[in-house]
Image (cartoon, rainbow, N blue to C red; front, side, top):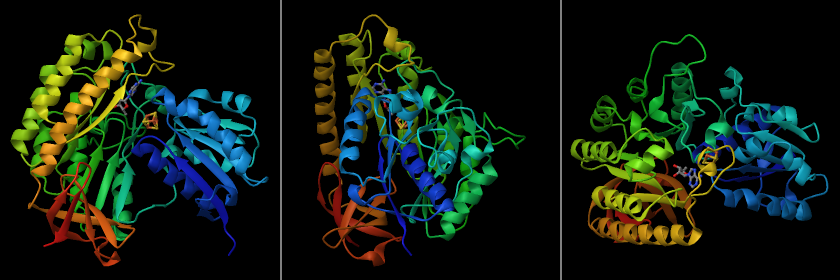
Length: 433
Ligand code: 5AD
Ligand code: SF4
């Protein structure tokens, strides 16, 4: 059969990665597509964008120019995702070679917009079709599953509530069915996705039995054949004791947790409208370390938020030194449209923000080197999920460390003990033990 070819570029977060899979499923409902990495081979080009910081947005238009130059004359270009949501029809005004614009909340309308030149669908309303998709997974061994959409917070730096809309909790029976299907097709591990996963259960669109995130985790862990549950991102504010106790005691929940700090300064956290203090954040991390000493904690930090003083930044450094995050995603503050912080007077200079970012990252590098060096000669149970070039296979330990071993596809889908023989900053190398 002669399939049409799709070139899809996915930027941003795990939600976007899953949205790309949903788009492929939606396309396939209409006519089968085959993925291609060759631009000039594609019949359809999709750029699934992120708008959380300014840089990728400004790159979008130069990229559209390149795509226009190298694509087949008949190939269509679609811009989807969060930048599509916030720029809408302006994308087509600026770049008429774009055939359609589809916002992050509108994935299910893909087959509708594809045939109508210059169509734009960027509503952030929703109905049940917003989360009813066909089946498609890039990797059968680890399955991403959305549990909620949108965000009910109003962090003053963040554009996401404007691009992904109000928070909606997906009915638990749909989630459980999707996970069972994925497990039947070979997934031993799932990744639950949502902007605030542990706020789950507050916003059902129809009559539902009450079910909060902890209860959802309990229901999911009863699924036979499923061995590992991960989730991203939880919000520190909703990390109640019940949830942390479930995290610690449920053997199917991987001992890896993302606790996005953003800033260590209580006064800045207030200006960010995060809803917690430095003391609360430290208390939650301390509780995680006490209940689950084997757990790894990752975080997101923004430096250079308006009004950030040297003392505020030192508070952030202090939290880094106390918690010793195993993974750090750190960013310079970027003023975004539709956000309150963009209107704050005291914006921090790029020079100061860069110096702070460098200092933060340098300290974290020291911490991570110590953590990784201490892994030498330890054994971890690794779930292998990807074949790599040069006879290697990769996978992750329960606490989320990336492993490489020599091996073949026979290892895929298996959980095997691995002895660490070599460490590096980003990954561990080992032998089956
Ligand atoms: N500037 C810089 N970083 C941001 N993030 C969100 N909005 C901004 C912004 N305006 C970061 C936060 C968030 C991560 C996904 O991106 O740290 O947790
Ligand atoms: Fe994901 Fe936020 Fe980027 Fe949208 S703006 S793709 S929700 S990180």
